[in-house]
Amino acid sequence: MSHLIASTPAPLIVVETTADRAGRAVPPVWPLASSVAVNPFLGQTGESLATAGARLARVAGAAVTMPRDWYRESISSGAISDEDLLAAWSNAPSHLRPSDLRALKAAAASDAPKPIALPTIADLAAEISGIDWPGLIAERFGAWAAGYFDEGQALWAAPRGRSAYAAWRAVTTHDLTPEIAGLSGFTLHVSEAPESAITAIARIADRLAVGEEAMETYFHQMLMTLGGWAQYARYKLWQAELAGGSDRTITDFIAIRLIWEEALFLRYGAEIADRWASVRAGHAAPVEATADLMTDVILQEAAERSAQRALASTLAEGSTWALHDRPLLQAAFCIDVRSEVFRRALESVNPRIQTLGFAGFFGLTTAHRRFASDVEELRLPVLLIPALRSCSGGPDLAATDLSARVKARAKRAWGRFKLAAVSSFAFVEATGPIYAGKLVNDALGLHRASDPNDPAPQLNPTLDLASRTKAAETVLRAMSLTLGFARLVVLAGHGANVVNNPHASALHWPELTNGPFL
Image 1 (cartoon, rainbow, N blue to C red):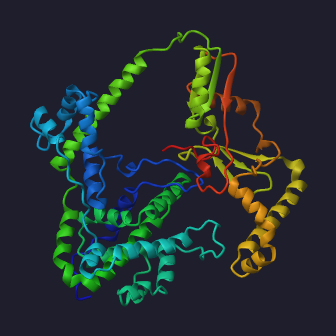
Image 2 (cartoon, rainbow, N blue to C red):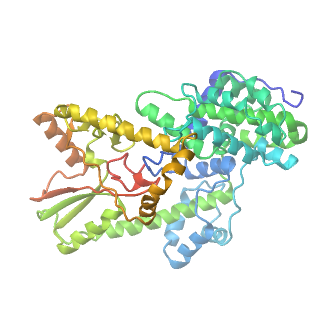
Image 3 (cartoon, rainbow, N blue to C red):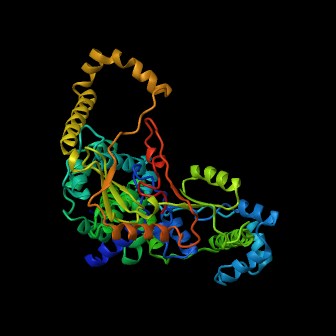
């Protein structure tokens, strides 16, 4: 402990609150089964673009605006006018913005320096030792997380029922990889860590002299070094809060990453102490934009004003038919881009055909259970919870349902036997040639998978007339379709068939499966 720094410990409530803020600064990422496009700056929605840019530059070296040559092209082409530039310039703080329009254009003529994140202790240790500690941390953490978050794909599943922090400690105390790489005593260090993640975070922040002012961006940076795993942990918190609960996984991740920092400082502290003091001061400084970043922010706002002006001009052109005329046909499609060709084709046939774009199964927030399945598929936007439930078939199909369950379980058991570590080799030797034709068909796409022939879905429980009427009203109001109805209103959905594609959910019913945008 000779290299650790004594400091005044922060109260646990302060550490916990700060860790929570740092966790919420990370955007969530939905799994492939949902395929939700997420704003990468979702965690900074309460901040200005300049502040968000300063924060992300500090913790990740990430830029929040386009390269300046992109803005230069728009200015030279006239897409961004002087009026746009002046309006954006006037909104910027006077002490950071260029002195006038000419100075702004002169600043735009040169490229801005790329943002560089503050180094972590792992980065500093790597420079001293020549060992890629950040890469090793990412690799070992990813190896553990892939098993911990497994949802049935792995044949040898990781133990369940523990918190992420406890599960990681249980695995890491038996992982000698860090010690082989040069971090001697790491397993002992992990085993002696506090049982509570928050207590561990507070202890390490105290020992590394990370004051309250520096904690938030330092903790945020710890999560950013874990990449998509931290985003998935943020998703777990999002889903838990959506259901009225909570989740501590992302806080556990901060504790896990900090244990690595503490261990590396024990090993290299004497050699990196001065630079680490400078890094701490950088984290403790207020999150404020530089003059270069403010110039980029001004250029971005000018570009947005230009786009808004062009859009307003397009919308002002009006339609070829009056709003009080009754449409011949109204067709509502999913907002998926593949529907656009159908919409434009319909509108080109007759100007009085009106199409609409919508998502989320046209307003019905439904959880659906397929025939002979216990799994509920959420067919609704990710921000909502199901209000209705449906299942394929009904009470009269109970016996058939049981038979189908037995068949499905037998099929899954056969599949596990084919892939199991012990039986897979014998299976290939005994029956492998029989599958040659199937392998060729699948590789060449000669066999088209058929859709499941499930019985007709039914709401459970069945809605009465008043409830169905209310649901219909909700659907139409959600689409802003409240007057001027055509005699024929069409709600058009779509699907897709794919083989061996982990991104299949992006092609299968985007308006039915956790809606595509956030």
